[in-house]
Length: 153
Image (tube, rainbow, N blue to C red; front, side):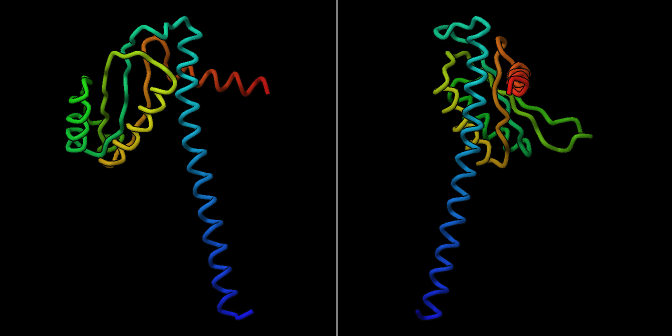
């Protein structure tokens, strides 16, 4: 076998290995987020939440500046969200927090789709989507559920 062919085969094998690792990590990250949405919805149902009733859902974003907040506000406002934002405490940095509110029914597939969409929206403007909560369930309750799950193992 020619040495050049062997080198090309090794390079190709390395690229395939890197691609597999990348897609495995990406899938794991997406499934973790989807599990989070599923856990929040499940906790809401466990606490007596009605799947057919609308809830006031709060969505949270961490954004780099007021301009990015304005852009995201326009997108979300056009979709019926009430949006507000403010700069974080200067001691914590110069970033902004954006809050969006909308009354809607809550289901696992819908919330997973929203998380996927809002993650992409935040990234488009240099920010980060930080999740959602309702008056019926908080993210702290989902974290408690995680810690309880760890005790049972």
